[in-house]
Amino acid sequence: MQRMPWPNYFMNITYLVSERSTCTRRKVGAIAVKDKHILATGYNGAPAGVPHCLETGCLRERLSIPSGQRHEICRGLHAEQNVIIQAAVHGISIRDAELYCTTHPCGLCAKMLINCGIRHIYYSEYYPDDLAADMLREAGVTVEHFPFTPKAVEIHG
Image (cartoon, rainbow, N blue to C red; front, side):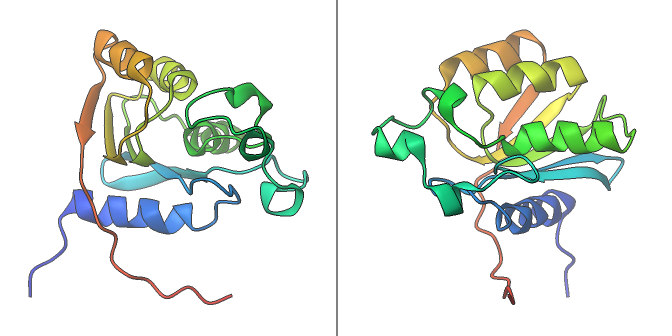
């Protein structure tokens, strides 16, 4: 029996994390990893203690706003932002860590990840933000498309 390679292991966990998402449009998960240890996890959704989009509905959907536009009117945080916040709240440095993300980071998240010192990003699904890709490349962050189909995991609720 062969063991699952590390990148597959971490990406599988990233998809499992995305199952906590409360976004009605796209479930996204992200994890920061250093030296084969998970430092922080995040998924997209409203801030703690605030009603989720599952309860309130999605304003961007009601206004027919395309993916990748008008992030400022979304009540949710992105998975990458929640990784950064979780690490900060718990006093964990993610400098020089790898980020596994179900979806390529947007421009705002790319800027935050650059300033956090993330050096390598693995993503599975495309996201329409050319500026994010340009900035990550300019900052010397290695971004690797990692096509992935998560292993089925039964979730009990």
